[in-house]
Length: 341
Image (cartoon, rainbow, N blue to C red; front, side, top):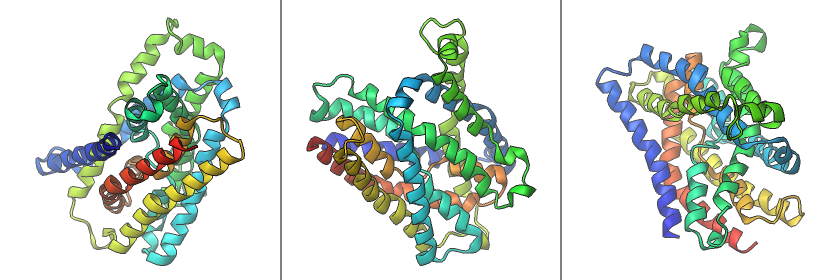
């Protein structure tokens, strides 16, 4: 239990410390507003697409999608539940009209890769539940990648244009069909088409060097997004960019308390009805995905649209601070449940 607490605590703490580095770089005059916009474009046009192609294309194949189609399906269920929670938050917290799209996306889209990947690997290596299962960590990584097959295209194909706050007719194609959305589809295609997989991904593949290069380019995407998130916190918000405490707490309640409980019930229902294989690691991954805080890429989206950066940054950082105790408690609960399935 102590190992689980430390993994959850330090996993979220790492994110907070990188954000603090972004605050410091603003005070040093490095991360100016124009520089941040340039970094956001760099992340969105190059680094994040490379990360998504390699993460999804490297671990997903047609057989897995056919046998485990309910995993990306669960991601869609969580998105819809988060959307419903977002409407509840708006009903009770009454945020300004300009903040409502931010609230809905913060409740709907979670940090589905950066936190679950190291957390699941650490649990597989430290929990007595998996001490006789050396492949548990690899299976957990595979399940998370399958989850991203739905989450990433939805976040960038729906969340990104939604945050623009404009009618679809008035938006450019670049504001609707973003590079991360296309790269998510490209990763699925590479993983599911045997010819492309053997050409790019398989060990000893003729063009494996391109895939390896993509992994190198994609590696800095998440740290840079966190630096941008922290840098936006350093700016003094305008009157219309201040997030009310009631809104912040309501989003945290919905995303970090209500949705994990819903995810737990959904997973137990799938297990009880025999929809999912009898693998405790799979059940654990599905429950953990429901308990993660909002996606840090939301701040990159707002930066690119030029609206809502300060508000979403304050919502995210507050959520991540609250996630330290809340997510740790839920992960301990989920592991206790998985041990008794």
